[in-house]
Length: 292
Image (cartoon, rainbow, N blue to C red; front, side):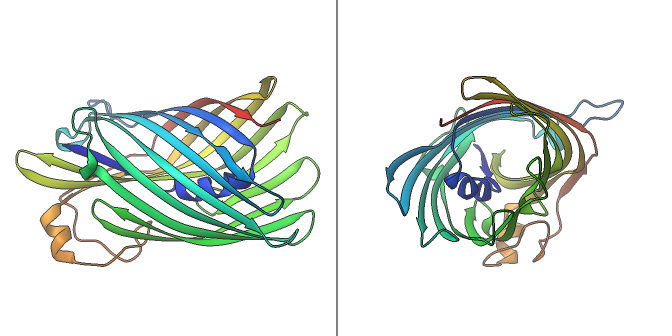
């Protein structure tokens, strides 16, 4: 049995609770091999958001997602094909024109295509509080707790949105998923930024359990183009500042016995049984559809 949990999307889900994006697809390719060994990550993501209840001050959004990932040539033959999904419920309430609170409840289940079941279910809880200072600047902060296969992850975050001019904008959770975007025209956008993904895998191999943690931090340049109607296409080219895979023995994690850890290595972990880190180029392309 092989399982995967996708973590940082929690912040994006809450941020998009107030956006108008109905649908997004994304294909990612990260070649990470050496001259004598081929290693790569390929993934396809599909996300949607549907407002089911809405009035002048509050809304409830259901946001299902689907993910398929192919991990090829990984250390110690941990190559895997995985599928999974999340069901996000986001409740948003606006107290006035400047203050908004988002509450998130997520059910998650990720596994290989041969062993998907109720034992794979995990959950995530979080909040995001946003303040609009003026027409040019707003900020938000929040906290999320996710129950991983290896334990709990506590994830505090800070988010900002600053418009230097009608065409130049800085936005996103800081510093892990921050972007600077320039509007070339009313249909074309060009930007640079940082994108961070964190994954947590649980595998059963030859009677022993192992947990695989993967952290990918990309610097990227992207182009977003309106295609027709409310559909946009986008493509990203970037460089993996960090593309790290760590394999832990489950018994070592159990002996460590911490109630939760922080992302990006804060809070400590036991010694990894195996580790792989490779800087590399990465490529993404996708399609999105917005509400009118």
